Image 1 (cartoon, rainbow, N blue to C red):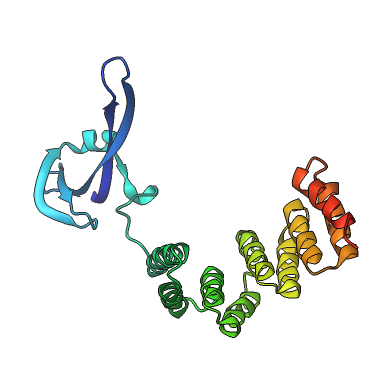
Image 2 (spheres, helix red, strand yellow):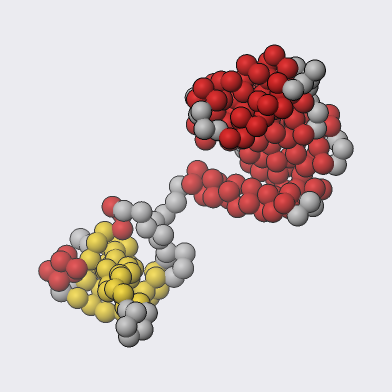
Length: 243
């Protein structure tokens, strides 16, 4: 028996005369086989539930030829698991919090990132954002708690976290926390030891910490990995001129 959400791919004309193009879009229905063996197609509500209104009835043979089963592909009407719903909720909250951070609404940012951490206490992006907001508010010790928490994640060395540790390193360097910055750049290097930008950032941190030999060693590594790295060449000259 046919019963569930199905779709039909329909042609779609785009543009006007002379600039027209063809595409297609999927029309979705809740399909249910009736007592006669035909298929009743019901309109769907935005949440994927179906109305009681039959849009059309088609013979089963035609239905099988024209319509696809939504359970076999990524469909906006597919029922989501609780974990998927939670992930989407967190993504939305992160977006809101980041917008507050961007607008320098730091108290609002700490509140929104805090909401994320109530849902997922190990969320690295939320710890980073909340830490940055606390730093901007001059709450250094509170910020450090969140930065330290980033080192405790079970998926610490997942590729997606490289940019987070790099971003944290930049934040710490800007605030004069050189040792902490370098430690986080080095965490990022454990994820990708061939990233020349990370060596550049480490060299910059050591330069600002007045550690010439360590700065040189890292800027040379950056240039070894990318010999046409113009910013690194310029930084090397600055380091070499240090007393």
